Image 1 (cartoon, helix red, strand yellow):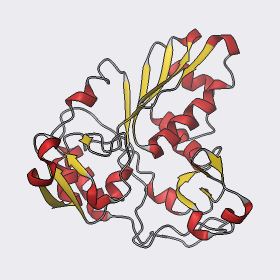
Image 2 (tube, rainbow, N blue to C red; image 1 turned 30 degrees about the horizontal axis):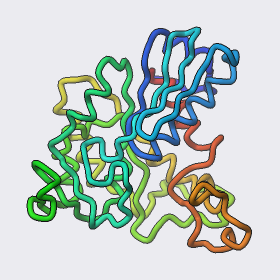
Image 3 (cartoon, rainbow, N blue to C red; image 1 turned 60 degrees about the horizontal axis):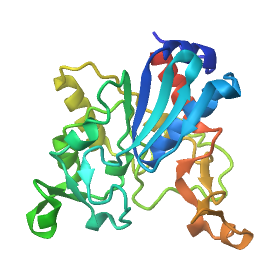
Length: 269
């Protein structure tokens, strides 16, 4: 059995010696990447580390270890019409479930890939799946149940599972304590999606590990950034923080829960 102690940044960097670690996914995956970088960078002298941030690809380099810890923005893993210019309405998103090559060429040569699929879980009951070009988007798509489309996604073999997608939204405003109820199961955790992941993993020839962080995350309704977040690059005002509708109940505070995900991840490396 793998034991999970405190995160050891020296151990992490030694395991990454001469390697590329790439986190691929959406803003929650970026949350985990930022956490990992924060956890290791403190023991590296200023002149022996560098950070290059981009809209799609960001790279933290530990020069002494010849290692990089990278993030690649690909919210659905496969191509979609909401990759760069985010479309807020899930009903208007169209996903090319059979197209991964443009993304994957950026991952060639990477030693460790960490995928997440949160956006799939919050896209509603049905998604618009497209085969071919986006130019015929409104004509050439087919609406599928989300688990069906998720199963068609050739990159469904994820490393860590997503957080939940609550039907009525996560209630995190003014929450200051974790859920204490034993065997707690959030109202929006999608067992159908979990089943898809398990079935795909069993059929794969390439060895993949899944870190199911869904259940431990369910308990931490107090760990979201809530109203202590930003919009348009600015922190919310006192008046805005008083409005529960402004609470960000998707992303997490750092330091915080993503550090726990990385503790588990390091134990499995």
